[in-house]
Picture 1 (cartoon, rainbow, N blue to C red):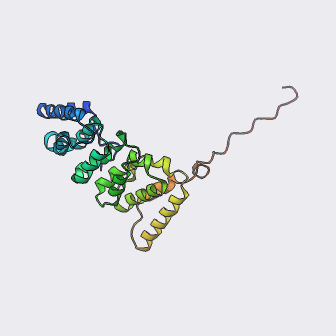
Picture 2: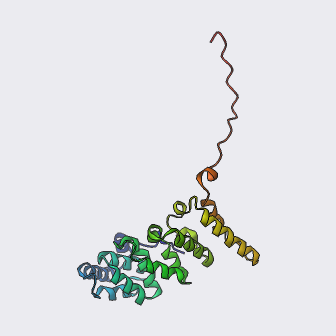
Amino acid sequence: MLTSRDSLKSRKELDAELGGAARAWLDEALAEAAEASPYASPPWELRYAAAGRHCGQENADSVRSLLLVEARAALPAVTRLYDQGTAAERRAVLLTLHLLDLGDTALPLIEDALRANDTRLVAAAVGPYAADHLDPHAWRHAVLKCLFTEVPVAAVARLGERAHGDAELARMLDDFAAERTAAGRPVPEDLRTVLALTAPADKGETPARPNTAPAAPAPTEES
């Protein structure tokens, strides 16, 4: 599964992969996006939906992200594309939120995706935007959502930073593991990974190795 950190390609990378017709289509789409009003429903939004058809499904996330950035998409446009889009179109919105100047106003989109059972949306929702804007309570539940739906925790942006020393997250992970064990279900290996990250520095650091070198001889009167 691609994570939110490795799924978007740059314009240069896309140009190297796309054929001439697809590059021309992308040029026109980006030009429309650059000239669009941030509040009206402009023509580039139709191209957003058609990105996979013209540039290939493997490039659709990257093309849609470029369109959103070029249009400097404001919250009304972002919300409209998310609400009216397919799962793939919603995923591209989620992957791009951290590149737009939205502050925390797009959190409802993250919260909606985390309520879904579509693992593609869950993985996209725990990217950099969530790391920057989800409060601790919501972020902990996002991590548990990944474990519950078997989304690799590698998708969680800044996992080590936010999990570090989080005793409440550790408690929630212990409870989750106990529930799985009681139900006769395996505990995900990723849970152990996250649990290790919650250790505070004084418990998580490797103890210093003892000095096994022989002691230096005591100085004599001649020295």
